[in-house]
Length: 281
Image 1 (tube, helix red, strand yellow):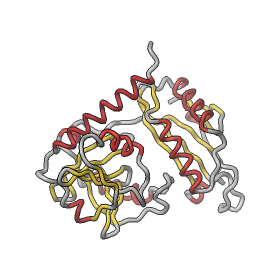
Image 2 (cartoon, rainbow, N blue to C red; image 1 turned 135 degrees about the vertical axis):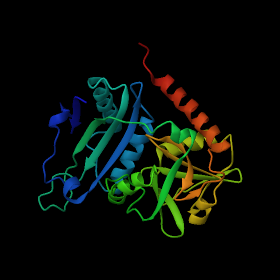
Image 3 (tube, rainbow, N blue to C red; image 1 turned 135 degrees about the horizontal axis):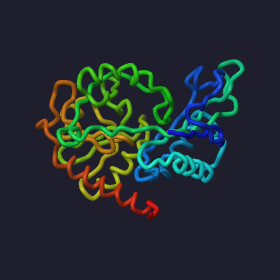
């Protein structure tokens, strides 16, 4: 990666920096957005910018540019980095704070990120998740508070899992870096309140609508453990089937028919999105 953008100015990627007084560093007061770049196209960019603005409002931060300008900066960065495959992260911080507590003028950092997609076997055989009791603070905003997820990353890897699922002892919410859906008796269930509004989840529901009934409501921990099929969604993992929760198989322990149909429908939906936006060579 050669270039990043800080507050509207292109800088060399290896020299991009903020001052140590920034509130994002000092207090973790910041929001971010991440989206994939496929064939040079920022995937579902419109949705990600809308969520970025919503997260900023929830932290009472004002982005320095409107949505049209942000789109222009993102496309410029894609072009300068010859970015055909990868990702872009947008970070909006609380700004340089003299007292290390009070937000000031936000800093905006837009930077390309290399992305390694999950291995194909996770879509063919399904992945494993672990459970952890945790309630995210201000879950509706995509903040930089990933303390629990980062801390648990070593345990996730050690147990051969792909994700951690949060719960409060009674209800499950979401993954550390993904949205959660379950299928039981031919109905898809997914939480809508008290979770981050997932962009990939939003598009999954669009393609799922003709295939099976959908209920957006809280999911009990017991329902997760008794689900016929479980799906995780996210910008990098897209739609991923889960076939094991801790040491317990999901359903018969194999990728189910709905998961297979939904993965195929999502890929067709994504392909159509990319085809509409790919510039002919």
